[in-house]
Image 1: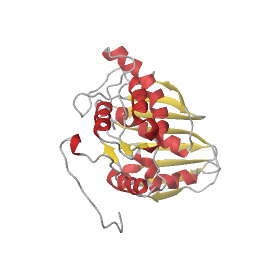
Image 2: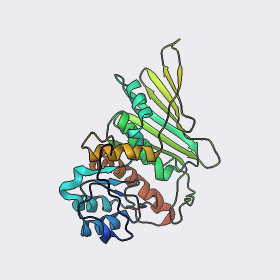
Image 3: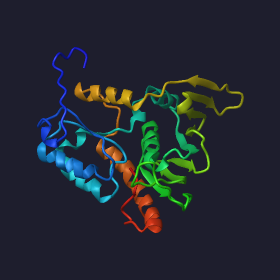
Length: 275
């Protein structure tokens, strides 16, 4: 941190080498081992703050186990769905201020929808908070491809649902190489977002209204994580969902996806082979 003359960097290959009360701990594991790693961490130390990666867990039952583990520290656990930190998405949220968002459509070719759909549901919640409901997997493909990460799977097709009064339609096309594209529509305006190109189009639905195209910077995760850590360490506002908020977004998705995988892979209905 700027002005901090007492910087200490510790490297350890063993959890036992962690300080007893680290100021903040980032748990950047895959979802299949995250709860086990958290339990091992809490046996040797008590982090003052935790930063977790998504997908939080593979099994619905693990959320309750994690809540019990965190106990009174629950409000100091954040989930790194980093679009909330990006200045570009703050600009987009401001564009929709004073109106009601009707929905978010996302589409692209083989962009890792299984592991990353939570990012887009979380983004919609950032724009306009609400409860996830009516999630349906009926438009997902029957074929379940293997992930680029060994031991995990992916999904293609379209995942549908509601967040509050807004819909979300999230599509990954197996035979396409198209980059991810977002379309957010409100009662009287809309926005098209192409993050990979840094291109955002702002428009109003009234006849004759001008359309404005802007080129915005969508930060790398390494950049947003630095901002988040500084906010945590200086007790400032952290623009990430806490564990309770993120878990409330995760659970309905896993509740819908679990039976989808169970019907095709024979896995338990509470389990998703995603990370």
